Length: 260
Length: 260
Image (cartoon, rainbow over all chains, first blue to last red; front, side, top):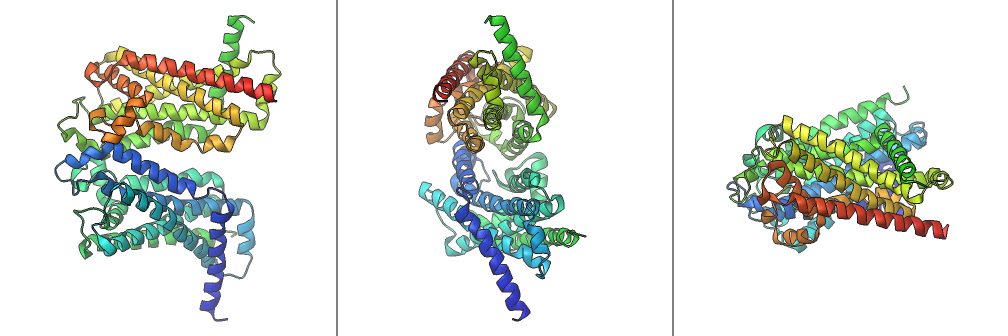
């Protein structure tokens, strides 16, 4: 077997194992799907009139929030990978993996790929809920592609963040820290209002938060005032590449340190 | 058994519940950290709402939204009371309590009293933090006292409900999964925005959500402004809820004992 075929086969096996979680753990996807939907409904009900403000790029707050809720669901799905890895470490299963002749990075590739696949579920359910409630898809196919790419890639970033922490701490108690990190990354951005309407410290923070640009990329699907274009896409792609490199480096470093 | 003895039993059980609460970080993070993080995000992320013509003038925006934070913290404090009781049931401590010569209702009252006490501490912390960040309460010390009392009553109300569910089901995992319920209750009340600015569906639902009257009462008390709500009505609703949910929990206790 060539090294490439071996890597693909091993990652595939780990990916399938990660997906088994959906079938075997009843309601495993419920928190990552239900929470964003509740958030979508609640936030739209509370803050819907913010669209009356000058500078708001759409008159539908639902359209503004749907991509955020998709990112939230995908981010939590990614974070859950870290929590699952922490469980595997605590129960000794990961130690058995480490003694195998498999290259270590491949041990992470499977769960991360599994998270990216799982992220499609909350993203699709939240998007469909938004569409049923009246958020349109003015961005068409290109916008939709941007939304899914943002969600799946952000999920990978959050999975790498979660895995870094899980490998570092080696205990399931790190779970809340992982999910709080996802929460803060997503919400300390242009979550509720566009950059021009953000005041104070959050305005400054959001400008430097890479998730702000990922959200802009995703909003090309549903927000009238953010039409699909390269100028709305490349900052998001750059942010995702940067975050992947950053958290990927830390995850691999922690993985390399394990057992030494 | 005299009222004094019952009072001492309730106080002892409440003190134990509070000690356990402060010993376990997993109980304190949702009760204190999460509401403060959401306060920071909402106070900064939606502060442009002050530009809306119907938005009431309450000085710093954080002062307006802190009422919602008080509610959120209180709901989470109430829920953790139920989670802790379910933990006692699963761990066997509840059965040991039943063998003690105390009135059964004291067990529930201890939990409700502890939640009220925790709600009081939360009120002081949250209003203090908001004050540090610019909120000024024109209702003075009396207004702050009423707001804290309303928060404490909310915590007691949800504690009663959560204890009823814990006693009825005895399931810790069910209680832990009720976390989204607090968001449903919060977002179907005018927690962070005035009722007039909610979207029509949320506004219609808010009429039937008793928490709407409590949060409006908190704002009316904090800013001594009857245009923001009716603090007397809020107190009445809060006290009524505590009585009703504690009654439910007592009923659940009787049913549990009858079937054991």
